[in-house]
Image (cartoon, rainbow, N blue to C red):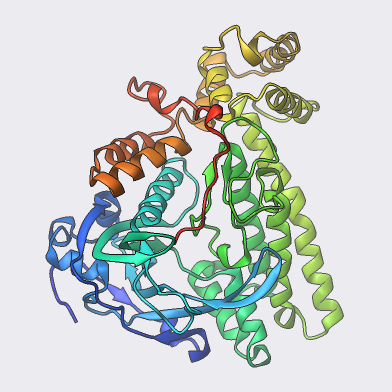
Length: 488
């Protein structure tokens, strides 16, 4: 047990759940930990002292060599539909070291990822490679900058050890911060173990932790289901707004809190195409960009199934309640998506023909292989050059209709532009820029490229910056198809 002035204020409420949900376990020590990335601003918001943690003690804690005061490390059990197939899972290389109570009295999970084998490792070594851990750090911070609910990374530590994958790779441990690590798959696990007798305890815990306003609802479990559906309709609409492709939308990678979690084979789309998929393991395109809304609904249906025993004592009535809530998802998502797209085009209010206007532009972008982010950025700042999509006659016709729609609203052109700037990022975590930063860090121990990238990604909607131009250039398509891999 480590005591210090670092600011740790850890609680362990998850450990009070029935023991089927976790295994108590200490992290496995590593050889020579070294902090290579530390999130100062996040640390401060958590009530942690960045000065105290920029130290050997900090490296020891974030590597798992020591545990901070108040920590009771556990590996969580859960299940998940992985590419449609239900599997019993759990934290195979991660440990929850506690729940930090922040100065704002918020409760957030602190988890070590890559901290060694657990009972759920299924033959794995429980370790993680430096590259994927840095990648999660970058992408999660990019998502935070974009205003999208997400887990975040507090630190990445090199372990001084090599791990065996296809080759020998430098090992690392990442410290992940989340509202909680309660997943759809946690409820699937509860429903499938011991005839689901501990399901109510889990659901009550989730409600009291995440949605305490629902505690006194007549049917708190129905209200809980509805709230989770609302959260994910909004979350996935935000993904679509910025061209983010999660890549592995298994039910164990969907959180009750509505945060984006598990940045494995994720990436941002360059040229607009709904069929875009980057993951090397998604051969059928199950989790392609255009499929994400539908998969979100499918995953929510699997979550709803776990709550049936709590929704009503009569099975038929419980199914009726669940179906009613799930059927609302499609409309909720569509409303969120269309609202976001109106924002991207500087449209206020709601008029008949708005959706057709959006779909027509997206169709033109697909036909012309137009970059998703840059197209909307150039529409926002008026820098449309007379080439590619913008030179096409059909685009000129669309542009006329768009301007007519904008001129019919009472808001000024300046207000419309401001609305567009709030919905259209100048920069995203371009796949090739992320790879450049990771290569410099992992291969050459040069973190300046990564630091510069993180700085730019922290203000993605800043249209006044003059340092972003090199981060706006898409990957050269002549370099072949870009592929991503699950973090290992």
